[in-house]
Amino acid sequence: MSHFLRIANLQMINVMNENIFICVLSVFCLILVFFLFLEKRNSKGIIHAVIFSLYTLPLYYLMFFRGAGGAAFTWWFYLLVITVVHIISLIITIFQICKKIKNIDSESKNLRMKSKQQIFFLTKSDIIKMMSIVERKIPIDYVLMGAFKDEVIRRENAISKFTELGRTIYSNWISLDNRYMIQPINNEVNCRIVKQRDGSYHYIIDLSSNPKGVELSTGGVYEKAEKVLIAGRVAVFTDSSREAMQIYKEILKAMNECFTKRNYVFVSEDALDLLQKGWRLTYSYNAPCEYDFKLA
Image 1 (cartoon, rainbow, N blue to C red):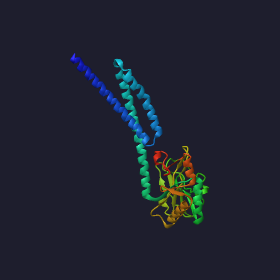
Image 2: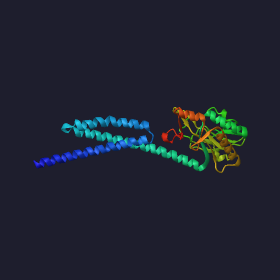
Image 3: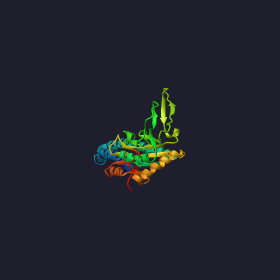
């Protein structure tokens, strides 16, 4: 009789250990789900929380209350497999989020090391207003920056003549479209010619070949999502020419005259109005919302 009691006790201990193990796994899974909410990935967090509830609630019920005749082990095994798969999925998701954040921070850090810059959140009309003040004070023109397949320079004497101004297809403020080099009017524009693997050439217009230029990256309304305004910036190399530094200073003066500086960022009344209406004012659409511009 005592032999059977010992066996029964051992079986009970094994069952308790198994139950504790699966409960620990479930708690760990919940911690990973909670981490998504901490990183402001609320939509992903809600999805994973719902998935967690859909399989844990019925399987725990079946395991504890409908587990007679060895069925409990079957439900335990199903719960183990699904939980492990869910944990792996969460770890992959969290790794991708952390990788994106790291890349964004690295790009921003590298950019700050190379240039002086001022970040802003402005609409198309705001940029036209700001640059109209500068245009009246000093003679400047604008050259579209980027890599082009032919040596054709897009050049205008007023920022308002660029119809694509104020919108962007790129998700972060280090964007590749709507980048303009502001320089003394009629100044020579230098192109870097880079040969491609297929034998063709790209003609690159940037500040590295034009020491009298200042970069104006306008950012703007993000066209691939709703209610998102991407930050812009004005930047100049720290060892730029006297002409470039003068242009840069005049732009900063116009910003101070027209807009408010909050948290080291210039923001217009129109942009603040969008913020009040639920828009994101962000440096990167893919970054967590906690990194967005917010009023203190």
